[in-house]
Every structure is written in C-alpha cells, then in structure tokens.
Length: 354
Image (cartoon, rainbow, N blue to C red; front, side, top):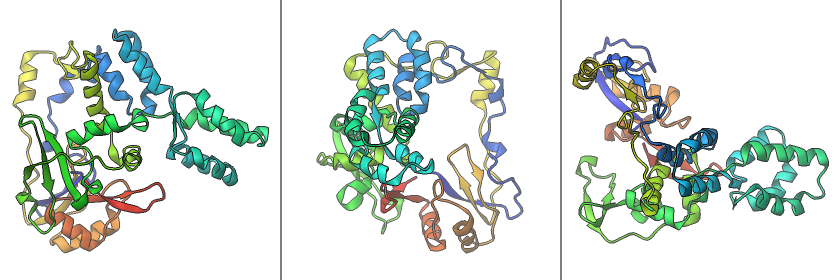
C-alpha cells in the first residue's frame, strides 16, 4: 500500500517526505555495490528480461548482451526492442511539441497497434502521410525515433495474461463483483478473494473456486500499458518465459542475489541483526507514505477529521490523484488507499488498490 495512517505523539517532529531514521539500517552504507551485476542482484539473462519492462532501459540491455551466453534469450530481447507502437506516449509527446492535430487524427487508426519493426510501421504510415509536407514528415520521423519504442507489455497477448491471471496480477475491477483471483501453487487450485467493502478487510479470506474467464485482452492491454500497472507484470512473465524455454535466469553468483557485498562477516551480522523502530506512538494522527521505507506526508493533527481535511487539499492517493475529505476518512479507516483507474481519455473505469 502507498499511504497509511499512523498514530504518533502530538509533539512528534520530523521533516515531511524524509524517510524516518528508525526505518533506515545504519549499517547499510558499509555495503559495497556488486560490480558483477551492478547492484541488481540478478544474472545477465534475468536483467535483460526484467528490463524489457522499460523502454529507457534498452540501452542497458545492449550493454548486458555480451555478458549473456543464452543466445535464444538475446534474440527474444532483440525482437521486443525492435517493436514499435504509436501509443499514448507518442501521442502525448506529439501534442506537447505542437504536432498538427489534423495529422494526428489521421494516425488514430494506428494507435496502440504493435509492429514488429520500424519498417512494418512505415509501410502502414506511407499511404497516410504521402501528401504531407517534407517538414511535417521529418517531424513525425523524429517523434517515432524518440517515442515509438514499445516495451514487452505492449506485445502482451493471451499467453502473458494467462500467466498474470495465475499470479493474481489482474485487478479485481476487471471481474464481475470485483473478485480477485489467483492460482495457489501449493494446493494446485484456483482461489478467490471477495473484497466486500461492507465487511472489515480483516475478514476477507481466500477460498477455492473455479478458474475465472480471462477478461477482454484489449482492456488488459490498455491497463498493462499504463503507468499504474508497474513492472511486476514483466517480472512474472519473464520467470514463466525462462521456465518454459529452459533459460537459466536467477541470482548473481557473485553476491548471491543481494546486489552488494560486505567488507566483513561482522558488519554483515550487524546489518542482519538490526531491527527498525517506529516513530513515538501517541494520540496524534499523521499520514505516511509507504512507497519508500516510510516517511510522513502531513503534519500531526489532533483529530482524524483535521488530517483528512488537510489531505484533501495537500495530499495524493497516487501520483497526482486526489480524494475528498470523506474519501480519505473512509480509506484511512479501512487502512486501504485506492486510486482511480483511467482510460486513455481520462475517464474513470474503476479503482486500483495501492
């Protein structure tokens, strides 16, 4: 979850948005970043697959290629990096840079379509832009070079979404009754969770069920290409892809997956034996973010009403999404903050639990 309520002492003073010192292990700064994996904790094959979630990481993938000896994995990564798509990033940047609106409307039929190469994209573009002027065509070419690369999620299909369904990564908003589903690997059965808002969330329980029907692939594509889905989807699909293909991905052998090494066993033991400490408890109400180790995002208030009034004006549920005083009060009472899920036009289609 990204936001939570803490009861702290009324005179508690700590800078807003600064990680609480009690949550930071003082021995951490004595560790040394592993030079073999550059701190990722993964071997080259794993890093290549995980980084396919981020277009801006493609340069890093190219640097990892010589370290990886799994040729089919490298060919798969190259096939993903070659893909192009005129997605929301392309259209947003085109509008920002003043690209002709009437010309953008002509490109709408190609929106979100994934092409296996830039050549494939241009084959469909040429009939559309043939009558455009040279300067506009050049501007389009520059936008494609900078903003038309597609991540692995853009190429997701039924196979990948089935993996995410088993892992419980498809939001409950896509199922009737907002039921959450996942596959229990230990019991080898499907289970479901009914997030009934009329009940205390502590009463929610996972129960055996039949395998649910996969939601609309087109709707899932829109969600998993949005900022809200994060990179976890690629992580699960990468593990399944490697398992299916027999690719040896996993921890870095040098640091055993920790991403860092220690100058001595003594320092390592001090780090392992350290325990975190909460801020001083009391009668005050304060909003904290838990995206990092944890930091306050509001002053301390004497009442929950006063905190929620402040949060409505000054705090977000996620990114720049806001909530009313009444919504904050309900969410903090349930200890479950949600953020709206939007389509490409900015319309609310549901909520995402964070």
